[in-house]
Length: 209
Image 1 (cartoon, helix red, strand yellow):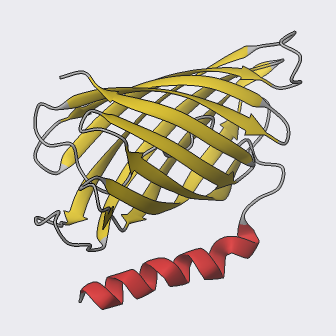
Image 2 (cartoon, rainbow, N blue to C red; image 1 turned 45 degrees about the vertical axis):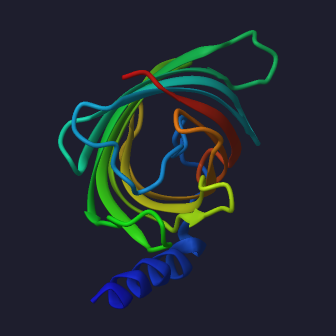
């Protein structure tokens, strides 16, 4: 069963990659996370930057474990569409994920998967935009010699984009990245986003409770 799910996940990425969109708005926040859940009552904060083909982004996120396998987060970003800082806009977002394929023994490598939903609001020149969608997230943690984890991950998402001055559109996005556990309370991220906002994202995540 696990092999079937993994194969379906990879097939979705390969088959849909040609549909990833030009002209869409795209996420301002990237993924910055693996499929692994935080656990009930645990929380962390992240600061990151996105360097894109048509905008630069400074962002922050707070993530909280709502149950053993469910996380929720709120996000805020400053979006600079011209790279000059002269027309900086605000984006806000929220999302959740549910981990349905679980690795209980972190001393070995095993594929993990989660599904979730997202919402984003953009303040645009001359209007605004809303993004509502769902995604599928997979990751494969490797245990390093020092006992820390290095976790490549990928997220495939579909969403409805609605600008205040145009019709709604169905769009797709793909994020590929890696999470490096520097210490038990600090993770570093590097990620590439293929989307309406094609960008490289870099971030640092810190446990806060």
